Length: 53
Image 1 (cartoon, rainbow, N blue to C red):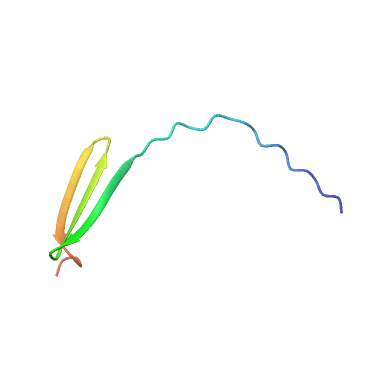
Image 2 (tube, rainbow, N blue to C red):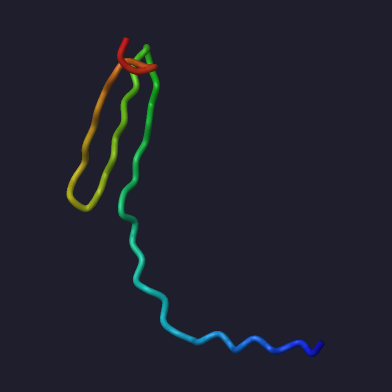
């Protein structure tokens, strides 16, 4: 059985890429704080660690 060559990859310019969001989660003193930054702004939420009880 003959092996067929794969077609060459088409060269193209890569799409412009940018970070959409960055965030951090911190657990301290029984509380979880989540901070997320996007192009639209920064949000923060704080809740008891382990969810609602």
